[in-house]
Image (tube, rainbow over the protein chains, first blue to last red):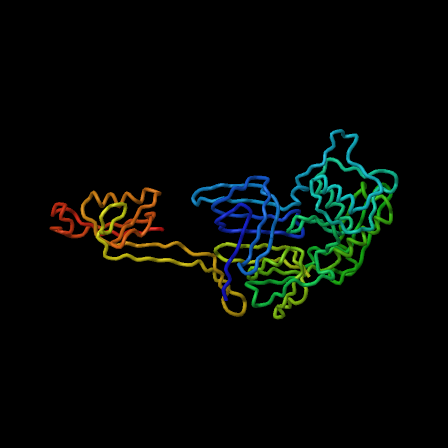
Length: 319
Length: 118
């Protein structure tokens, strides 16, 4: 069995290596292209397509952040970040401190949509949430914070996620860091695996969530965990006086985050024969019964590593 | 037409060509090795022969300092332009040379090996 490696990157030729990595917890995905010729400059759009000549996929689109030209060997190293970097780099600051961006009676998805649009990210999909902010007559004011940081704070209140996909579209959605009614995009077994490890840990487990909101608004949610001693609680705090201004919203925030965090983290690392159809936030079916690693896993992190040494995909998985 | 490189005469007794394909081998946990092809390497030519006289020896040795391509001529015509990757020269024991009749009989004779990149 032999597959001819294939890769294209906008305005790059004689490509030597490409590395594309993305993670559920990272604000942006990143890519590094090493090539012998390129006309790219900082700020240019770049799209990366890689795989095999018989099947390849777009694995990245974004912006060039740094171009390094070196000799011995003579080559270009192009560092890139995906569309979300615009929101990371966009610092919201009003010309007049007395008139910052402000909104009343606005849903979470519309608020995040506004913040993304400020950063020029209009290709946006916001799922419908049950959170509406500033319903008490006082506006939500946003100033002196990056567009991404504020949006991430909103996402964290709902236990949601915000990210940009391989086509540059921004999603604000209920994407949990584990399989949640998803379908599998690939089945991975011994024929695909180069190396694999599987682990279980209480590292990220939290069985008590405390929420602090505006004056007098607070809530908590807790539940015993079979993985912790009886009556023992590992707590986490969610605090936002700016956004949490009703008791029901505080309680919802506590409940949503408890459901997300009160679980044993079951995960694994897998290096497989390169597969460009797998992206971060997909789910894959693991078929590795001899180490107990079977069933649907969430792709928490994904790295496509393509070079003359071969094409491998490194997966960070969660169950 | 004699063998020459960059018009310097060389008496070739062996000319080897070598080419390869870049094929990473990945080994999954079960099943056969997976081969992936990355591309192919340009020809590497190794020419072995004799050179007579210090002038020609130095001319060939100096080719390694240039980044230019030099034309390698064979009796059948040009073999193309090559960069000189490596030159190995060793003087051989010779009392009277008759290879180059245009040079003195006591001219030194050198064994030369050149590694050329296409």
